Image (cartoon, rainbow, N blue to C red):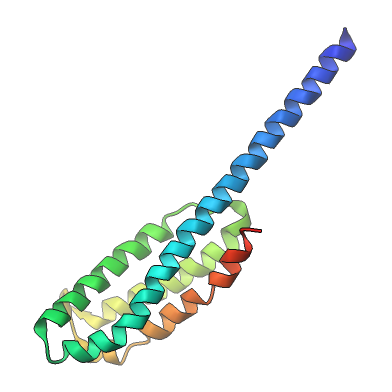
Length: 145
């Protein structure tokens, strides 16, 4: 009887461990998907921004759209920074958060009293910082393995 109970306890422990491992894998995949979506959004912004900055100098509607995109970007950054990363992604997430904080600082510098100052945006490192963030995509994709 003791052997049966011991075997059942061992099996139960193994099942619980497997469930825990499965949860960790699911959390990692969820994180990877969220991070890839976020980085793709930043990448899209980096591709569109230079032309929008040029157009915004002569078209107030484009300037307003650019300002709205920057505000939305700050919201997305803050939302992503608040994600709890799985243990396997903690270092990468911290790198992303650090770069994101620099990006928020640069966006805030380009905004004066809540309005976009084009000359500050043109002279900012926002696009370079976005490219730094997007360079982490390969590391994030490796987490899927």
